[in-house]
Image 1: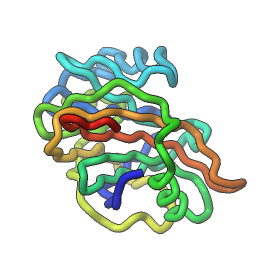
Image 2: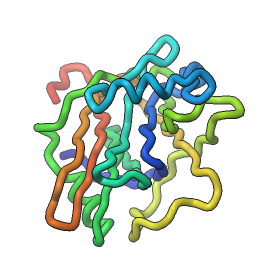
Image 3: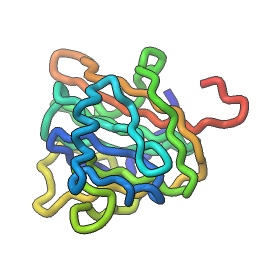
Length: 199
């Protein structure tokens, strides 16, 4: 796997998947107002992306086997890679570290993601992308890896807005993966596509 990784934010899910989409397109998503969320439910785990406006969004999380009500931790690497990890286990930082180091050769290959605006938005697919039925987007900021899993916030948990210098990402998904009897994870990996890149 790539790295080194820096923790840039966390997303709380109550079992709903999130979208990762070019921020300029997020206003076209009406997961709540127009029941577009149902389109994702119908896709199941086989679906890795869904149309949003003139583009597509990657479907990120959640893995109900790892946990229904759960944090998903967002990491970014110096080379532009982005990883979203949903983890469970008594030694939470170790599970996250092992999830990031876990090989991606057997991961499910998803549809590529185009981010032409330079900003990538993560938000719950059950919400709208903007307007009264949306959630605010917090900026991605480098910080320490959470030492404990911890409870959800008392206020509404925001989505995440991440800046990127890359316009196209390859997408890979690894569903429930057992590390040992007590620790497991799922992972969604976005890798910048560069000219001549064979990854």
